[in-house]
Image (cartoon, rainbow, N blue to C red; front, side, top):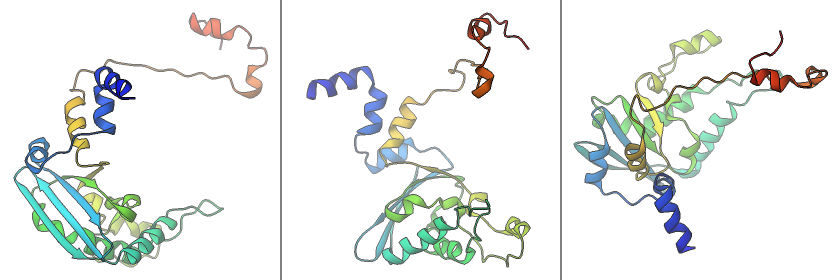
Length: 216
């Protein structure tokens, strides 16, 4: 097994770095962040507390907040259930008061440390892993009487771009192995599948397609 790991590391370093990233200390993590970026790390413990780390190129701030983990999970589950469509294809009404309450508990405490930030990388934990922070509501929500009223909602996604990372260390692989602009080769893909009854009488059509002589 050790030999296989060594071979994978030599042949596919990007893959190994993604699945088994080396731990990063604070200074190394800060060095990998760019101006306007922040990393927001959540950790939930079993004593009804939430820990938050805000990491920026020049800031490393730790915060602890009281948070009922069971109540949080119930609220996230309620939000997720509202994202399901009914049998007629209609979504359930979203409880904006829950989303605003979650914003005040989870995001408002870190606001003083995000001045000048437009891109937040989130490392979530527990129930937060299934909650897109961009859908939180940053201001007291308006009364919703029609679908058009949702346009007036102050969604957090209108203030920040969000990315979700599996761990703090994963940023190292993303920065190290990301392709630079202009490195990608142009690609054009054209699909013309023959589905169902269209296959009847289409014998040999694949050869014609390959030669660019597919009949119309």
